[in-house]
Every structure is written in C-alpha cells, then in structure tokens.
Image (cartoon, rainbow, N blue to C red):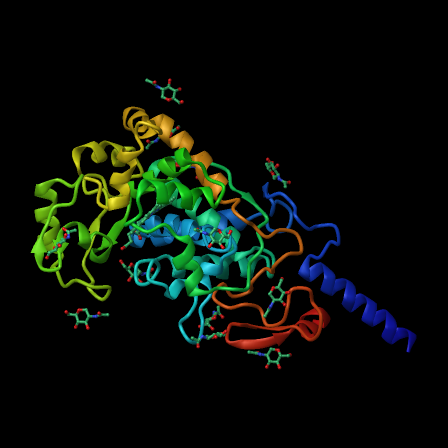
Length: 356
Ligand code: HEM
Ligand SMILES: *[C@@H]1O[C@H](CO)[C@@H](O)[C@H](O)[C@H]1NC(C)=O
Ligand SMILES: *[C@@H]1O[C@H](CO)[C@@H](O)[C@H](O)[C@H]1NC(C)=O
Ligand SMILES: *[C@@H]1O[C@H](CO)[C@@H](O)[C@H](O)[C@H]1NC(C)=O
Ligand SMILES: *[C@@H]1O[C@H](CO)[C@@H](O)[C@H](O)[C@H]1NC(C)=O
Ligand SMILES: *[C@@H]1O[C@H](CO)[C@@H](O)[C@H](O)[C@H]1NC(C)=O
Ligand SMILES: *[C@@H]1O[C@H](CO)[C@@H](O)[C@H](O)[C@H]1NC(C)=O
Ligand SMILES: *[C@@H]1O[C@H](CO)[C@@H](O)[C@H](O)[C@H]1NC(C)=O
Ligand SMILES: *[C@@H]1O[C@H](CO)[C@@H](O)[C@H](O)[C@H]1NC(C)=O
Ligand SMILES: *[C@@H]1O[C@H](CO)[C@@H](O)[C@H](O)[C@H]1NC(C)=O
Ligand SMILES: *[C@@H]1O[C@H](CO)[C@@H](O)[C@H](O)[C@H]1NC(C)=O
Ligand SMILES: *[C@@H]1O[C@H](CO)[C@@H](O)[C@H](O)[C@H]1NC(C)=O
Ligand SMILES: *[C@@H]1O[C@H](CO)[C@@H](O)[C@H](O)[C@H]1NC(C)=O
C-alpha cells in the first residue's frame, strides 16, 4: 500500500509539472523569452512555419496579422478565434471572420512543430502572437520582441466577435470607442489601422460605398475613378459568397509600408472606416506624420502591436495550454477529475501520460 502511495505521489508530481501549475502564478506579466528554458526553439519553429507558408502564399502574412488582432479584441489574446464549434457558432464563424479570416492552417502547422519539440508547453495564443510578429517582419522589415506566456481560453462565441470587432462602417467616434474599450488610445487606433497597407478585402466590406442597391454611388472620401474600378470588380449583388477580393493598398499590397497613410488624402482608402481617420485628423494628426515618416510609423506600429498583444491575457494557471488549437482540452485546466483530451484523433487520458 505504501508503494502505491509513492507511485500516486510521483504521478501527482508529474501531473503538476505537466500542467505547469505553480500555485502563485496567477495574474503574471507576459515576458520576452517565456519559453527560454521550457521550449527554447518555440519561436524559431513558429518562424519556420510562417516562412514556409509565406513562400507558398505571401498573402498569408496579412492574414496572420489580422488573426492576432481578431483574437485579441474578442475575449483577449487567448486563441479563442481558433476554436471550432460543432454547430458553427464560434468566433471564426461570425461574419467579420467568415470567410475572410485566414492563416488557421499555418497556426496548426506551427503547433504541430512545437508539440513535437516540447509537448504541452506552448500556448496557441502565443503562437498566434509570434506568427503575427513574423508576418510583420516578413512584409515590413520591422522586428520586435513578443512578450509571451499567454494561456488559451476555452470559450468562443460568434456574438462576441460581432460585439467587439470594429466594423468597416464605423465612424471615427465608434472606432475610437472600440479601441478604448480594449485600453488602446485613439492614436494607437490610427497606428494599428496602418496594417491595412497589406492584404485583401472581399466585396461586402466596401459595397455600400459604391452601390446604393443597384444604383452606382461614390461615397464621401472615395475617388470616382477608384469607385468605378471597384464597381467593375464587385457587382451590386455581391454577397459573402462572392469569391472576389481586392488589395486594400493597391499600390504596394504585399509590403508593410506607410503607403496606407499616403492613400487616405488621395481618396484611396478602401473602407469607410479608413477614410474616417481623416475625420479625426485635427484631433489626432498622426496619419499625416506617418505618411511623412515611415520609420516613425514602423516604430509606433511595433510598440502598438505589443500593447495589443497584452489585451485581457490569461497567464499563470489561468486557462490552459490547448493541445489542438481548434479544440478545448477535454477536462478543465485545474486538473480536477479525469482529464483527457483529443489529439491526433485519439483521446488520451492524463493518467496514461503521467504514468508513461
Ligand atoms: C480600425 C478598425 C478596423 C476595421 C474597421 C477593420 C476592418 C477590416 C476589414 C473590413 C477587412 C477586410 C475583410 C474582408 O475581407 O472583407 C480588413 C482586413 C485586414 N485588416 Fe483590418 N480593420 C481594422 C483594424 C485592423 C487592425 C488593428 C489590424 C492589425 C493590426 C488590421 C489588419 C488587417 C489586415 C492585415 C487585413 C487584411 C487581411 C487579409 O488579407 O487576409 N485591421 N480589416
Ligand atoms: C530569455 O532570453 C533572452 C535572451 O537572453 C532574454 O532577453 C530574456 O529576458 C529571457 N527571458 C526569460 C523569461 O528568461
Ligand atoms: C498554398 O497557398 C494556397 C493559396 O494560395 C493554398 O490553397 C494552399 O493550401 C497552400 N499550400 C500549402 C502547402 O500551404
Ligand atoms: C452550439 O453548441 C454550443 C455547445 O458547443 C451550445 O452551447 C450552443 O447553445 C449551441 N448553439 C446553438 C445555436 O445551437
Ligand atoms: C531592414 O532593416 C534594417 C535595420 O532596420 C536595415 O539595416 C536593412 O537595410 C533593412 N532591409 C531591408 C531589405 O529593407
Ligand atoms: C526581420 O527582417 C530582416 C530582413 O528583412 C532580418 O534581417 C531580421 O533578422 C528580421 N528580424 C527578425 C526578428 O526576424
Ligand atoms: C467592451 O469589452 C468588453 C469585454 O472587455 C465586451 O464585453 C464589450 O462587448 C465591449 N464593448 C464594445 C462596445 O466593444
Ligand atoms: C439610396 O437611395 C435612396 C433612394 O432610392 C435614397 O433615399 C438614399 O438616401 C440613398 N442612400 C445613399 C447612401 O445614397
Ligand atoms: C449570394 O449571391 C448569389 C448570386 O446572386 C446567390 O445565388 C446566393 O444565394 C447568395 N448567397 C448568400 C449567402 O446570400
Ligand atoms: C522620423 O522618425 C524617427 C523615429 O521617431 C526620427 O528619429 C526621425 O528623426 C524622423 N525623421 C524626420 C525627418 O522627422
Ligand atoms: C474552461 O476554463 C475554465 C478556467 O480555466 C475552467 O474552470 C473550466 O472548467 C474550463 N471548461 C472546460 C470545458 O474545459
Ligand atoms: C471527455 O472526458 C470525459 C471524462 O473522462 C469522457 O466521459 C468523455 O467521453 C470525453 N469526451 C471526449 C470528446 O473525449
Ligand atoms: C484537431 O482537432 C480538429 C477538430 O476536432 C481535428 O480535425 C484535427 O485533426 C485535430 N488535429 C490534430 C493534430 O489532432
């Protein structure tokens, strides 16, 4: 019986190590190099996955930058955006994310690589943050360090995405309020909007600027020539199933430069919300400064990305380190009861791992 007790203790100890549950670890700060000892290659492996995907499709970088933004604004940077739901009611199914959000497979590939190097250690939320940084570096030659140690959430609800993500129809006041709700300033809203210097958009995000039902219109702040071009691309009956996309920054769509800010005064901002930055220009004149000084914007953008990456993060023993980024581990992270999870298509119990 004593032997059994020792085994049980050993299993318990291994179990606590596995789940990384130091008692006093709640509410920690994120740290650069969080995985220095637990998974020294984590950031390199993520970088490799992003580089591979980028070599196949350079547009994926824009997708990964937006993925981090859409993760952070909804329930914090907790990888809730990656969760799937059997009845299609997760964040990723909501209109702002479906069909436009992309990069999920890159995160899955990165996760597979880090799981194989260091099982049950690196959170999906951190992988998303690293992948966004790598995408920024690949498209913009901007390098910044990502504080890490985020834990993954286990709740993902489509309505939360609708409630928390700014819409392309938002006014300046609504945009400022949306970012303020995430502890980001109006200027940081202007800085982060510069991400629209890369990537693409489906028709539905700007259709109301060029069509009033079936009548051609030209929204305030949109060039007539650009509107004509967009109308040729997007018929008035385009909807979320229309596969057509167009570059948000048509001159340098794959480069994270300051061109976004140069396009705005030329009436070439694609979304109503982009053009709204001009409406607050007297109060927040940063857009003009960024148009004039690319180095300035790059520095401010890197800092704002780090700040965005801190929104409502779970740390320490909060949440969990998801094993498969698209599904919650089976059982709570507190380890109470019989915990088991799905990985590589099979359910494995924690007891089996602890004793193997
Ligand atoms: C200020 C409020 C914002 C609004 C209203 C907004 C809206 C949008 C919309 C409507 C799209 C196109 C979606 C579609 O395909 O239909 C888009 C794309 C994109 N957004 Fe934003 N966005 C905002 C802020 C941001 C921020 C803060 C970032 C990142 C830091 C970001 C990064 C991107 C990127 C990279 C794309 C292109 C995605 C791709 O090519 O896959 N956006 N945004
Ligand atoms: C990880 O290592 C880097 C480089 O030596 C250092 O800057 C960072 O502070 C370290 N982080 C932790 C949490 O140990
Ligand atoms: C390469 O990119 C295309 C989209 O451009 C995508 O459909 C395909 O799955 C990607 N292939 C790999 C191996 O990532
Ligand atoms: C969808 O499934 C979730 C559980 O996964 C449940 O909480 C929710 O009520 C379901 N929603 C609908 C609309 O059926
Ligand atoms: C990237 O940035 C570094 C330092 O900021 C600079 O020395 C280098 O020339 C840049 N490379 C490119 C390709 O722009
Ligand atoms: C960022 O990109 C430049 C080249 O464009 C490279 O020299 C640098 O090492 C990259 N930085 C990081 C952190 O990946
Ligand atoms: C503000 O953020 C909270 C969560 O932090 C969210 O519940 C709420 O819906 C958000 N409101 C708006 C208007 O974005
Ligand atoms: C759209 O057209 C209707 C009349 O058909 C008009 O009342 C409305 O103001 C127009 N809306 C816009 C945004 O132009
Ligand atoms: C989108 O438009 C097409 C063609 O007009 C139509 O067949 C389809 O049902 C529409 N889809 C949605 C989701 O509205
Ligand atoms: C551009 O911004 C950088 C970074 O803040 C600054 O060092 C530089 O002096 C600025 N250049 C000009 C021409 O103002
Ligand atoms: C979700 O996470 C919370 C907090 O970590 C935990 O209490 C709860 O049991 C988890 N639920 C599931 C289904 O894993
Ligand atoms: C999750 O774990 C519970 C308790 O061990 C088990 O009854 C259930 O079948 C598991 N669910 C899945 C999807 O593996
Ligand atoms: C992760 O979960 C999804 C959804 O259940 C499944 O399709 C996928 O195969 C799983 N991935 C791995 C690596 O097990």
